[in-house]
Image 1 (cartoon, rainbow, N blue to C red):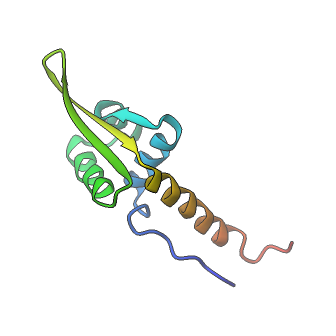
Image 2: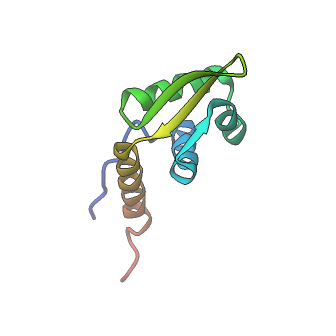
Length: 99
């Protein structure tokens, strides 16, 4: 059997959750990601930075009505990495099944 290597950046529950939201919505504000993932602000911030460092998301910090706003947007590289991660997981799920 051929098990595909899992991307260590995406093989984290919170980072995977963030990427799942962004695969669907393409971009999301920090507060929306916090609500959808049930993460603490500190942990979410750390995981967003990891995704940004990997080139999977772009992060824009701006002001809206005098309040800071952080917007995360998935990159093309992030979309490809997520799709590859899903294929890798599928290789584990289909192992041992007869075709």
